Length: 483
Image 1 (cartoon, rainbow, N blue to C red):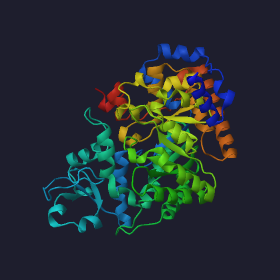
Image 2: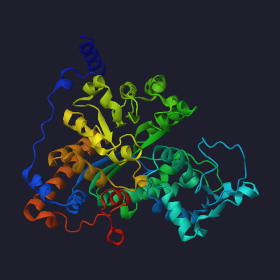
Image 3: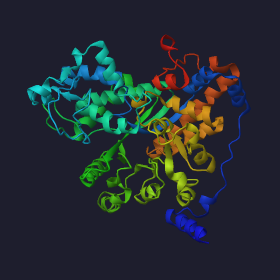
Image 4: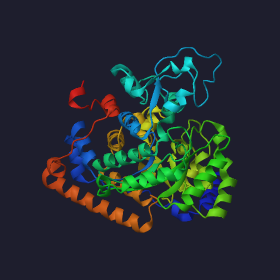
């Protein structure tokens, strides 16, 4: 009886009623795709998934979604606008008693800062840094590798405590941020992705001399870059989110600043909370009263919030829905909260699934332990996304490959994932309908070509850019690096 009462309370709380008890979706299995999977090796399957039209990437941190070689070339190009960088290549034991648990630990190789900031250091600390352009080939490779989780011993602590600290001043240049948008759009369009909703860093901008720049400077740079000819014709739509680091003392003030900006800028479609959930200072209900006040003053704004990216069972997903979130990022531990699981069945919520992220950050020990297929087949809307793919050295195609390889997805399930990502996007309704129609038409044409002439006819020009993760995990490597 108590269980039934809890379930009824959850259903009433989220306003789902009988809708939440609808039947589990029945995904039929297209014979042509099952036959293809049965005879395809990993290379053929990967090429198919790379060429297959896809929906949207809804959970994408622009700063963590950029590959290290992009940062390297853009950092050097920034010299034209006065941005010059140095990175730490040695430790001279200049200080004792430093705070190694702060956002800027001292004992950290390849910490990258601006020339202006370097000039204000004492002589001992200045000697620890070298200009980026002066690095040896070995140092340059090490700088690159320091931004990727590519070693067995690296995991959650390396990612949260070291990767972001290393990047430091790189994201001060508005033109660099705008170019990261451009590179991502080109890369995703080549994968057949129809929509990107990226969390864009607009509150860390500064002049080469370190003077803060308003977020509008970043918006202006991005908008100008989007109008340039090489992007204007790309078959991909783009919108932005703003992120708030949830556990900082000033998180409420940062939330108000982000919410106010998003409320007045049409191409910013949502606000998000980021940061380690196992830091209890960022617990979701901390923001219940502030968000209610913001809605009162500015009106409702879409929220897509990280929740359930934690090892322990808790009610963070439920509490995040109470904040007003329409989408949940990760949701790994939702599987341990049956009332909320029932409440999310058949929508209107969506869980943004990040398979590779959850494995590399040790939220699951194996892909087979991930609750994703249960969510999908239980009737909870889900979509695959990349999270911080630059730090995994992966792609959205990799996420689809993992899903098919480990969970034997049908083509109907693949289609449902892409359509859910577009249906639950925060695009304006008219544009959402247009993107969905384009996706459906592109997918039908792809399937028709495949059924008539196989992969060669469906994607004759498909040349997947195999990245480090797929090479290490499945030995799908570029020819020159194949083992």
